[in-house]
Every structure is written in structure tokens, then in C-alpha cells.
Length: 183
Image (cartoon, rainbow, N blue to C red):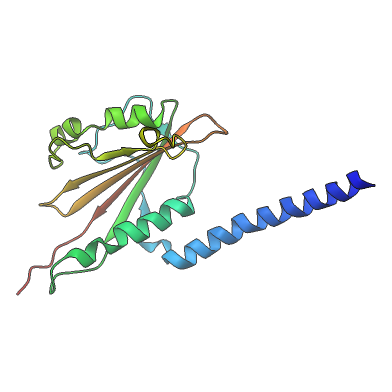
């Protein structure tokens, strides 16, 4: 009898968790707005080198947690422009790839030196990547930011390991805003 009760409770919990995932996605989509500012592309841009072993990912949409982080972080970048300049976010183009390599391999490839050679601004001696494994949180992955000040372009790279598939998903997100000159 107890096994039957536990089975019913376990089934109910599973059903609630399944609904919660769908609800979370709906809540995040409402919080961050529509997808009109997020445009999926099919390949990397000419100024972003492609690491060997990247292949198209099976993910068909941007995960809600990445979309929410983008909306919060990148969505406020326009507000840093001086008064009188365009303070809107602009559009975010994104693409996702999968690889058998680790997030640390990804950050090892997308170094400041390699990105500067491809036309991105020099960050000096500082790395533009933050690794979860360096902080003791290997499940977080890697987060990198590259900038082209003259073109008002930012590139965000997020690499996270999918424990179920053993693959690393690598998200490339590009935000380019048009600067309206102050009269």
C-alpha cells in the first residue's frame, strides 16, 4: 500500500515539475518580451573564428535562462550611452553549436589574442572569459565577452556542458547597436 502511495506522489511530483518547466519558460518569455530582438543565424560571423569540432546544435531555441541573462545584461547596455544618444538595446543575433570539447577548451580557443587578430578590441592582459571551473563551479561553464567599440558591437560567448548528452553547447550572441550622433 505504501509503495502505491509513493508511486502516486512521485507521479504527481513529476507532473508538477513538468508543468513548472513549461511555466518557467512562459514566465521568462513574458518577462523578457517577445523574440523580435533575437534573430537566429546559421553560421558564425566573418570576424569570429570557428573552433574545430563545432557542429550545428540540435537546440531549436534559446534556453530561457540565457535569454533572461541577455535581456538583463545586454538589454541595459544602451542605457550607458550619453543623454541624447540612442539608448535602445538593438538586435541580438545568435547561433548555437555543439562540440565534444569542454567549456574550458572553448575558452582556451577564444583567447584575447585570437579575437584581437580577428578585429576585436584588445582587453590587455586581462582575459575576457570567466570560467566556472576556476571558481569551483564546473557545471556553470564559460562566459566570454568581446567588444568592438568603434562599431558598437559586443559578442557574448556562453559554453555550458550538457550532462545528459555529454556535449558542450556553445552560444554566440552578437549585439550591434547603431549610434545616433548628438546634434
